[in-house]
Amino acid sequence: MERLLLTTLLLPLLSVDSATSNLRTQALIFPRESTTDYVVLTPQQQKPLYNFTLCMKASTDLKRDYSLLSYATRSHSNALLLFMMKSGDYSLTIGNSEIFFSAPRSSKGPTHVCVSWESATGIATLWVDGRPQGRKGVHRGYVVGADAKIILGQEQDSFGGGFDANQSLVGEVWDVHLWDRIIPVEHMGLSWQNGNLLDWHSLTFQSSGYVVIKPKLWR
Ligand SMILES: *[C@@H]1O[C@H](CO)[C@@H](O)[C@H](O)[C@H]1NC(C)=O
Ligand SMILES: *[C@@H]1O[C@H](CO)[C@@H](O)[C@H](O)[C@H]1NC(C)=O
Ligand SMILES: [Ca+2]
Image (cartoon, rainbow, N blue to C red; front, side, top):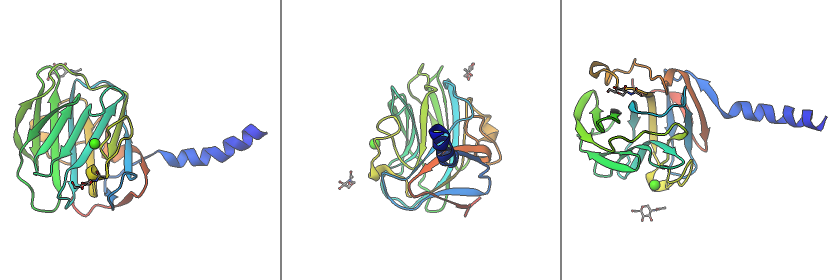
């Protein structure tokens, strides 16, 4: 009886926690600077990444560093981190090894960024607004672990935590897609491509703190 009561009390709480939605027309807004506002994304499959492509769109007018996507494992809090530097350079960290790409600072409005990486060669390629920004080598031979916390809005210094308000994203993100492979060059920067690990059109996520979902302002 007590157990039944507990189950009926807990179930509605648990079911609102993590949901799968089609966010095709929607953006996630992080309206304020904080260490408490973030979204945890659950991939469609948990698998180690030998290759990946990550694409996302973001809009912010921050003039400091901020995290675009933070993927932590228990052994590496920066297993995969896409981070924007105050300078306007992009930082990509793979297994705690960091490289930088200088890219044209888009004046305002949204940025569409894609990054791919291949373990066998360590080659990473950054694309901004559909244009390649160059290739660099980082952490050849590393494998991005499967058991991960994938977080938007905050940068993890530990598994699922260690947030710093100075690295939080204040702004909005949408069209986040992650593949376990390098997608063809002609598809980089096309928003209709759906990731097989993270798919904005079928996204399982859980938000914490002050995060708002609204129709996209930009395509
Ligand atoms: C990663 O990509 C390389 C070629 O780019 C391919 O040979 C390899 O099989 C891929 N690995 C996996 C696990 O998909
Ligand atoms: C945030 O950055 C500012 C300027 O660099 C610094 O003065 C402040 O102490 C930082 N705050 C935190 C919480 O790290
Ligand atoms: Ca940090």
